[in-house]
Each structure stands twice: as C-alpha cells, then as structure tokens.
Image (cartoon, rainbow, N blue to C red):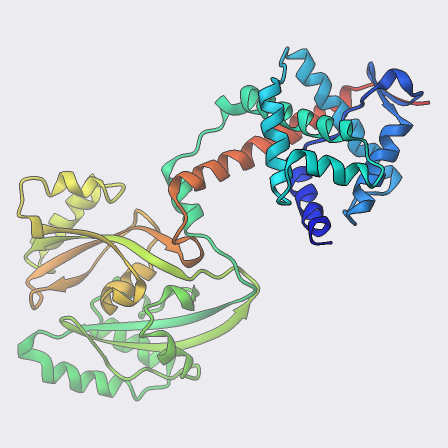
Length: 406
C-alpha cells in the first residue's frame, strides 16, 4: 500500500513535467482520435484511465485523459519533426529515475503495473516521450532563458505565509553627542508623553536628524517583519497615537509613534540574513561630509561598486557583510528596513558624530531560503521559464492542429 501511495505522488510529479503516454502497437487497434497524422486508440485511453485510477490520481476521467493524450501526441510530432531520437541509455536512465521515486527497480515497477492490468510498454512509452520532450524544450528554448543575479537575489528574498502585520509609524532620531546627552534625554522623555500625531510631527521637524523630518517623521506602511527585532514588540505594545520610550542607539536617541496597524493577506517575509555595506566618510553630517556622500552615491549602483570607491583607503573605511537581523545594530537595522537593494542612506553617524555612514542595502535572504544554493535557484528559475515557453508553444501547436474524432 505504501508503494501505491508513493507511486501516486510520483505520477503527479512526472505529469507536472509534461510527460505523456504515446501510442504503442498502433497497428493492432482501431483509431479513436486523429491528431494530424497521429493516432490515439481506445486501448491507450483505457490504459491511461486504468493507470491514473489505480493510484487515485486526478485527471482519470475519460475526457481529461483524451485532452492530455492529444497534447502528448502533439509533443511527439514536434520531437519527430526536429529529428530528435532518444537513446536507449537515456530511456533506461529515465525509467530508473521514475521507478526509484517509489523505491523500486525498473523490473519491479513493471511487475507492479502488470499485476494491475497495465502493459509494461505503456511505462516505457510514458518515460520516452517525457525525456525526449524535456530535451527538445531545452534545445529549442534554452538559449532564450537567461537568469541574472538580481533575479536570484529577489527569489532568495521571497517566502510566503498566510498573513502579515503592517504598521504605520513615525520616527524621531535625535543626535546625542556626549556634551548634549542629558539635554537630549530630557527632550526625548518629553516627546514620549505625547499622544498627538500633529505634536509628534512638530517635534520631528524640530529635532529629528533623519530624512523624514520634513514629513514630520512619517514613514509609509511597512511589514513589521522588516523592522529591527528589538522594535517589533515595542510597537505591538502600543495603541495608535502612543509613543515608545526613548530608545538609545549609537550617537542618538530614537522614538517611534504608532499611527496605524493592520493584518493583511499579503505574503510576509522573515529574513535569515541581511547583506549590507557601510562606507565611512570623515566630517559627519557637515556640508563637506554630506557632499562627499552625494559623490559616492553618484558613483555606485550596487554594493560591489563601493570596493572601487574605497580602493587605496584603510580597510576599516568599508565594511561589508551578511548578518542575521538580530545581530545588526538597531539604528542600522532601522535604516535598512526603509531600503530596497541598491538604495542607500546617510542618516547615521559614528565616532560621536564625527564620521558619516554611507549605508547601502545589498540584499536580503528569506529564512525559508537560507540553505538554498544560488545555483539551485538559477536552475529553478530556468525550469520555470522553460516550462512557460513550452506551454505557450504547445498551445500554438494545438491551435494549428487537425484533430478528428472517429
């Protein structure tokens, strides 16, 4: 029984790869359907129905089987027109691969089918067209399919879940050099008592050093999972309008006001690693420092470009790494949450405000994909695109075909 269940799953996987059952011993049976010059017999239809029904696989109804066999005959004809021939070695490998999915040898698998009234030749034909079609699709469309690094990065950064929590937040980041530490603390404690969005925005315009100060510190809707781990529970503990307690970050104090929260059906993302780069510029947020940062921004499109900018400078001038979100400093994680790959921020400083940080997001890796090799992602994307091209090609073949029911 276990083998039968496993075989059902294997059939579904094989069917997903568009492998079909071509006719065999056609001269022994009357034609039921003509597809161009190809023949589908009643015996084939009955065999396919028996094959699918035996393992409770979907699509075992007569009409579904007929539609599938028509498509498969079109595949056969395209393969023959291209002059492709399947070697015995490839056929044997394909049969072994399929039988191994249910932990059987090829002969054991054929015996199992024969015991249930399914001819062994059906299995051989099933595999031969499938393997030949796969080779044909690769040869015909393989040159059209290109996968670039950005697409791999995007795929690695994607995962899914049923729901996600989005938050609408306003921020205030107040620089706190040592000589103003007490003053900034007093201001921050005063801001933390407000429950007015308008008042919080006024404070942001007056005190905040971030790029959002002109918008009153208002940030757009964003997924809670994008924010620094330390900030998530603080926001979930607020009611709309309330403000977090002052949060100490390097060289500054941060406050956040919750303006809205909602649960959606959109996919959420939990990240295993964030890849980012930090290039350090002397002068802090002085006009000279900010001008130097703009020059850097004009020269870079991706993180790797920063290596050229930092060439010949001390190694500590540029930091590049991939870290779990929990290991990223809170202020850095907050700025990264606002960025897409290739975007940058100059909101942060180091060395008590004397050094400006040019921060750039390189990419994110979803938790579900942290153990996935890049070459596996490339192969998956290629296969998906090849299948899409093959499906479109098959639709065109069917539209041009002469299909006659006897």
